[in-house]
Image (tube, rainbow, N blue to C red; front, side):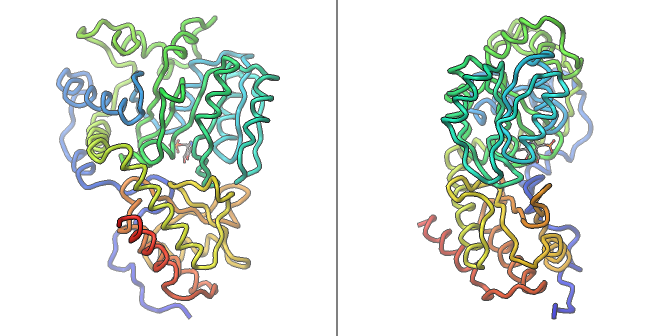
Length: 407
Ligand SMILES: Cc1ncc(COP(=O)(O)O)c(C=O)c1O
């Protein structure tokens, strides 16, 4: 029977091992502990917003402008869609899970003639079939979720972008759960709209939407027949009012500019520190760290006798989606881990909600410091709800991966 000691009584909050929002580095939290700044004040622009924007270009691996807006991942996706798509435009939406389907919904709301390219959840993308479908549909844009958070899978963004370019379609990439955790090469791959949010591998607080815009995407916006149906999130307004000429915009460099939306000052300060920490670590090192943490987590899970949901060749390093053993309710495991061991993981979503668990290894949680206690708590919680596995087996297997990886 479960222990009668409540181990979490001494904790005030669970450790966030869900696939975002994620734990924050201490300096990022500290950056928010300050009095209000004036969002249109020059000192905020020059001292906080501009350095953050410039740093984000390195994180995105782009020379394009990265727009920093209030909102979340969804805001970024919608801003991209509403700005480049006009009613009746054909869009090919790669749908491999909950977030691919969300993109289809966003596209249909902006009036797109959306064709879904469905992928069985957890399965690989058939690149040749997608190429044929792109030839057939001849879309204005192809959308892809780089890292499908609902199934814990990573899709070949470079190859999809190549297909899009071969049919002269815009590449719209959702990098909500990949940017700053996986290698995301915006310019090398030819991503026109790279759309993400602040609260996952960037390890900043929830509340900022980020979009990088290529020259091709600006041109498409300039050629619209009608203005976008959003005032605040019409990216063309951002180009006109906000982006300097040297970065693809219309505002002469060094001249005053006006914010298309009031930018949240505390969140930007936090993002500034998050970006600084990412660049200090180095993008390549950061991707390697996430890869090792993902490997360790998967090794631990396998040693517990559990299997991953997706095809192993496309298992994500930032989100692990794990099948629960027969007869074990994911929600019961999540509740037990939270209430008894102080660590919050997620259940699956939608049609795999009752059969899978999801664990994020994002930002600072992609480390032994978080992965090992999570595996330990998972083993305990699974035993508490009736699954028998050898105590410590998962932790030992993960330690081995960390030890070898660090050698
Ligand atoms: C891949 C992906 N796209 C979009 C979203 C939506 O982002 P947000 O919750 O920040 O609006 C999420 C959120 O988990 C996501 O994982």
